[in-house]
Amino acid sequence: MNGLRAAGDLVARLQMTRGMRLPEAKRLVADRLGVSVRDLSDNVVMQEVRAELGLGRVLDSEAPYPEQPTAMEAKMNIAELLDLPLNCVQKFRERSTVVERRSAGRAT
Amino acid sequence: METTFPTRMGDGALVEMTRTELRRELEDGSARAAKVAKVEPLSEVELDHLEEIFASRARFTGVDIGDEVVLTYDGTGMLPAAKIDGLVQYEQSLAADSCELFHPDYCFNAVRKVQATEAQLMHEAQNRLTIPIHYGAQADLGRYSAPDGPMPNWSELLPEGRIDEARAAQEAAAVLAANDMRQVAEALWEAGADGIDFDTSAAAGDAEFFAVLETIRGLRRDYPTMSIEVGMASEFVLGMHGQIEFDGVRLAGLWPREQMRLAAQAGATIFGPAVNVNTTRSVAWNTARAIAILKPCLQEASIPVHVNVGMGVGGVPMHVCPPIDAVSRVSRALVDLLHVDGL
Image (cartoon, rainbow over all chains, first blue to last red; front, side):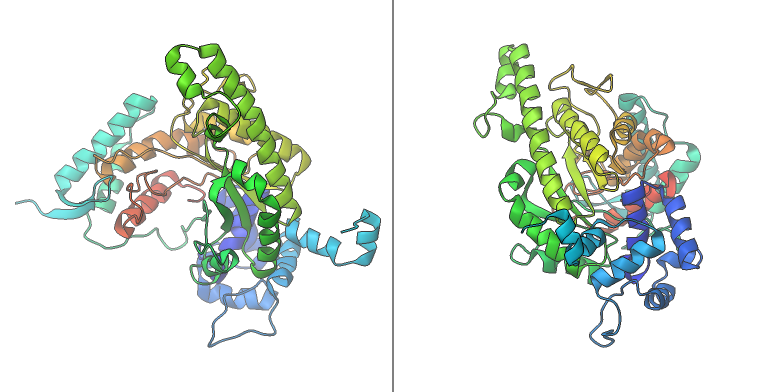
């Protein structure tokens, strides 16, 4: 589905985490992004949408995006947009606050 | 004289066939599936569509715009010294929808010994990639039998007629395998993995499938949001044990629909059926056969189905570098006729 060039990773996440069949997963992602289902695999449309929502983009040496989110920052936005509990985002939040670490008793 | 079209054999060899010959291959492949798997043969409309896909001189073919499906993998990033860079290449250069970190041994038994370093790699990979990252390996029950493992070798016991001992050895091996799979899955999840791919499941038969299903059930209970993909080793679960059951269903002899039902019951979120390829028959024959076998599975699927289309399964030729003309025809045929959720 063109991965990060379009919306393949987003549809994949709903299949992987929610066990959604393809039509249902495509519909939900399209609704959350405010685009048509057909737009999801159109990298021309999705490059703009991903930039606007901060969902991460394919990097190109001729078009760097230093102001755009890093991978983890993009995944935080994806988790929020799709209302998905992304494991790495949850772990990142837990491990990047002293309060959480103290309450969890993390010694290492 | 009838025009010929370039097509492939199941071993990848390029051959020429007429439209009439291709049609005969498709009909025969479908009939063969109906006979061995006791499924309905493909309809005339379905055979017509396959004939259009294969009777073409095009280097590459594809699905209609908008009909694209999600791709998951059994191992991505083939740079041993730079595993994370390999994953990044799949994301950035190949536009993969997902990727999979793996150890070259690709076996939970082997990974268990190095799971800390594998988990560290996953941790770092999650900071560099945006697309979801599975960790993949296979149960590989044979690793637990002599001379490599602690259990008696059931492949030696069975020919000697020592059936009870062979069954006991497999049951004991399944316990060890399930423990390794659980430990590795937990370690990778704690490092931030999006999920676990239990690939090439049931390669050693029904006891291995049992170990995988039991592991998944436990993981789903304790990790409700973990992605769990089950990729099968072949179209039919071998009855190396013969009596082992999961949820009251005997595992020996199960075809993709029944495999999918149990994978979903156990808690998998993606099921990957595998249909074997006959290298002496054409890709058209193998594709028609695969589609007929898989159709009941897709019709009943309650979770996404990502059909295995690697080297030697699903209709793709058995070759280390499967030719793109064959891979694209097989992939399009599976999407067009079965409406698969992914590949």
